[in-house]
Image (cartoon, rainbow over all chains, first blue to last red; front, side):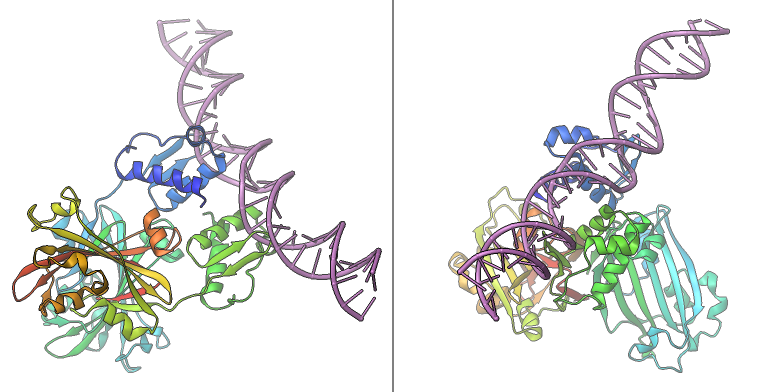
Length: 234
Length: 234
DNA sequence: TCATCCTAACTTGTCGCCAAGTGCTGTAGT
DNA sequence: ACTACAGCACTTGGCGACAAGTTAGGATGA
């Protein structure tokens, strides 16, 4: 991006974020911005496409470009042993968790490379999509050591909250020995599952979860959050 | 990005990340990829520019495109009261902290909107750039309640580690009442200070820091990390 | 045989032209 | 007076053509 493009980007992003451009109006057309900034049309197009990839606007050929609805971010508390589902229900009335996968993990899956997961373990993947206001906002994969939960494959409708599931199995005290966070852009599968654009950064948190009383590993967890839908309390 | 562009992007990014393209060689030219993927040159260019903005490659007109040196990420522990500088020195021999700002904060600064910072407080901003391998990797802003440190404005050379500074003032036990994390792209100032490209996501952590024994607020802290240089332990 | 210069073929950089889509206004017909 | 259609002016979408930079190889001259 050259200086001209950056100038246009800052103007448009500031206008989007501070409300100068409103939801119902069209964004200024490419030719309007060409006149305003005295730059070739291709530079305006480049900037607009960049902002589209960030997920702020969409375009309709022949009609114009429009703001997408901005959502207020919800707060995720990264520590403590309160269920994610409970945290979300406190902040919004429109939360849903949907199990998208419940399957035994094959023996050659990379999860078996994790410390403390031995080949004798039976591991099930439970994958859930978390919806806020009807839109996917987070993806939650739990790799569960299923040895102590032989009925897990029939438990599909009781897995939308893993904490609830564990509690119904008599496990009430949890702890974690590590929790790592990284940031990346969505790959093709993540864009599809989370319905997000190329340039929405994702926060990925990888951790384990133990039965504190029995000192027994329950699961490895990988959670992928859209950073435009959540902020995080450490 | 249409399907053709995404196909090219995946091919190039995978090649970059798994080492197919090596540091000393040129990336395939635009025309080579045009032949290989059977797409218009503009689509190849769009993808290459995207990857440049992510910080992986750079170009030289008339010569070609090349990989930038990839760095191994360092681990930042987000909890506990160990100095960031100590954490870094454990992981790399080439760490440096440079004070880039030491100034009293004017009374109309937004920091005075924070809870527990009253207009009577004297607040100093200490801004430090953290260098890894000679490159800026994190920006650290501490808004210090300077009432108990009247000599702070003369302490420039003792502020590269705030923990060291507090310890030299007899404060040895710390705690924090909140810590919030968000992710965004760098603005113009951040790109300049951190020497990073448009599409390097930044992790921003905002927190406070208290003298545990005196139960007294020491500072508000804002830390901005390049996510291509760090990963995070919660 | 070596050095220098020039040209051609390669590379990336810039942006304009044409295509496709849509909506609005004016005119004509009923 | 109302409705329908056509044309024009607006919008975004696609991509090719030309500019600028560099390098390598070949030819010429010393």
